[in-house]
Image (cartoon, rainbow, N blue to C red; front, side, top):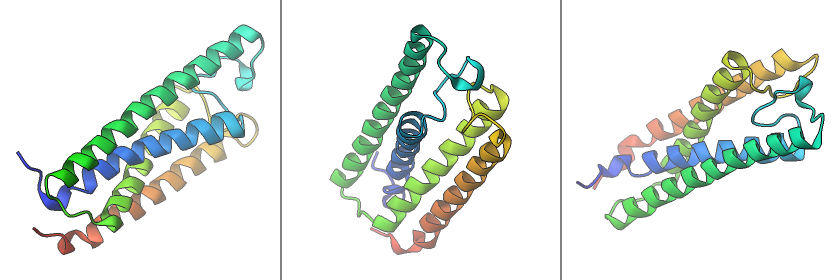
Amino acid sequence: MTPNSSDLPIRPGFVVGIAVAGFFDGVFLHQVLQWHHMICIETHCVATSVASLKRQTFTDGVFHAVMFVVLLVGLAMLTSALANGGRMVQRRFWGALLFGAGVFNVIEGIVDHHILQIHHVRFGPMQTPLDLGFLGVSAVIGVIGWRMTRATASTVRT
């Protein structure tokens, strides 16, 4: 079954957007800024021993590995869609990517930061405002992406 050509950049873009958001979180917030790890059991996400640092680094690595698989799936979807004769519309693909990134970050923020509380954007006095800001920025990114995919939906026909 060949996918509807108007959907071709949407599904792959959404999946790639999930991976991009995950990699941004993992690389920038976990590694560069070192604000948190995937799972923070220790107070304020500070490694209290080599063993706890190893555990935190391992969970970050598992998260990155999952995001890598998600990225490969999205790219496979994109190349398959293009091989089936679909026309690529860049704005819709990038809009879907932003939508996927926004949705991923909102879900991850609600589940990990607020429900499970396994980590926060950054521990400390600004913890709640940063967690809420993360959700707000993610929602805005998702809405911008959604609007980009809808604004051009009528321009794709086979």
